Image (cartoon, rainbow, N blue to C red; front, side, top):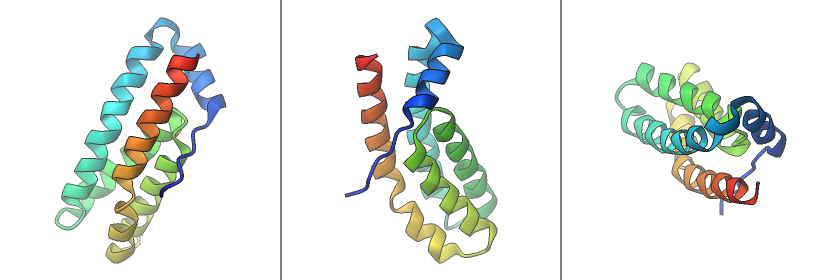
Length: 114
């Protein structure tokens, strides 16, 4: 099973920054995680530049909202694509959807608890 890591401090910081808009923004980000991961998977074998862009966006968005393990997997995909190591990028991408669903669940649980 894929370990999911969430940075509580990053979430608290975003909650403080966004105030009333935090819940809606977090829900939007959760759906963006899924969209971007699916885009990475769809493009990784046939459009390297698009896959890099999507992995980069996923990495940044996940990190900003404390989904550290998801961000790390996206970083690994992006890095390997940039280094022309498609096999390693594809291998790393196999964890993306599990990371997305696990991160979404933990972020939503955090939201309910806070």
